[in-house]
Image (cartoon, rainbow over the protein chains, first blue to last red):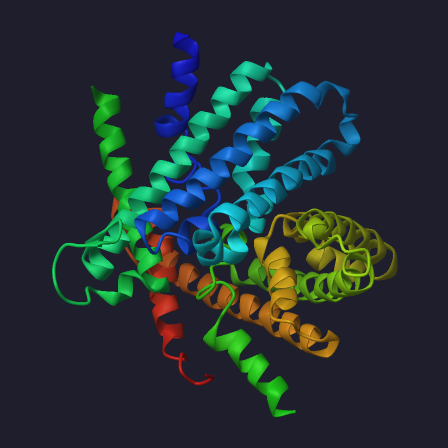
Length: 198
Length: 193
């Protein structure tokens, strides 16, 4: 059990997909104009990540080495389609806000990277926890980035207005995404260094 | 005619794939250290993007819609793009070794470039015809190339001339430069629609 918790923590902190591995930048920048958008994008990706990790760790040994990557992509694409249809059915508002970035989970490098570097070599149970950890790390980073951008850009948190006024609109727009991510990355590096010293 | 010109201007400047729509950020950050490599990558993306948008358009309208299996879109498109990239690589190697030399190493990377799948899906969502799809994907590819080359030029200068603080080295400073470039491109907004 201790090992499992370690796998999860590793995904959140040590191997955080956004701040450390710098993977999956497109949805990170595009869907974090508010905290709730970031959260839903993160959860959708985490869901795909867990299921694809599980499936690939179960069938991985049966797939010939040469057609490994295309097979992984088909498995991932199948789960992405499931998420896409489920969200279109039950969460139509969020589905239309995230739009094209839901089908684009297929080409999110994080999912394929975990399939190749973890799920294919490890047992099913560990792979689920790896998917959960990395997925949570991705979700937390996205939510935090969305939180910061929403706070600065419209003075609100999860849709609740904290102060009157329009906010610094730049942070909702495209350039703000780049700036916010850059400064959060610096912050993450500083915090990480302090923790390692201890 | 003016409709096509509007599509081109909108795709390159106003809704730039990278700087306004956030598609293809990975190669944008990854392959932008030198202007020369970014030229190669840009060329390869324009080529593959246009080709794959045309092929996926045909698949959508002649296979998926008649068979009523539009929900297979994501799965089919990504497989087609992966196969297409592989094919382009093989054909290019035989037909034009010089071009293959220039673009070869970038081709495998393009499969996971979300701009390719993204533009293919976008042109379906926008209900474009074949001619519009071709123009739109060509212009989007050109927009990607333009942003990539400009960004590489800025990063080259940054490496040569400026003294970047230690904590900001690498990705953070690249992201800030990209943000400034995105701000510059915001100046184009409002030209079309």
